[in-house]
Length: 205
Ligand code: GRF
Image (spheres, helix red, strand yellow):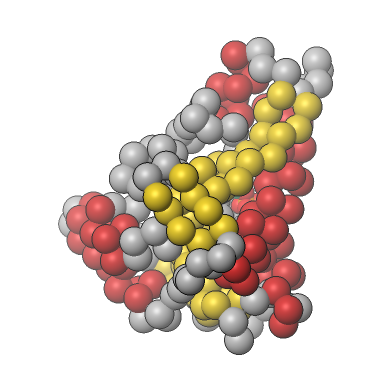
């Protein structure tokens, strides 16, 4: 079975799909044991269903406050004993309680070259800034907004006639490949986090 992955998503789920496809190969080193979302009825949940992967939804609207939502999300993930949690287009910030339950074991994918352009409008902000190279980052999640230690990055060119959608689509092609490659290396070779430095290989998970 390899490492146990829980993937959290909020929308289309193309990054999730890339992981579902990769994990069909037993040599990849991981199995997606559950998919979680923060809202019902999203395409990512359809993809989980099609892949016969258990799925759960923990909606913020169903809880009196953020802390209780965070605790419910933590419990929902913990039920699947994940080795690694992958935020793949999960559009909510997870809380301190969540991160303390899975220390160094939660990664996120962001559609910009961090530390530039964190937050929900990374692609738009990069485009408005006039960058010529854009890209994506896989990072270990900490309690800031896209501030955690960087695991891997990939870049793509920005074209003169790009709008946000066109640039985001180009980034997402690179992002899916980066996420699959990085998660695969992490689960197969192990990783360590020392301050801001993430090292893959020659270490235990
Ligand atoms: C990705 O670009 C992710 O980095 C961003 O939203 C997008 C989600 O895409 N936060 P998808 O749902 O995986 O297709």
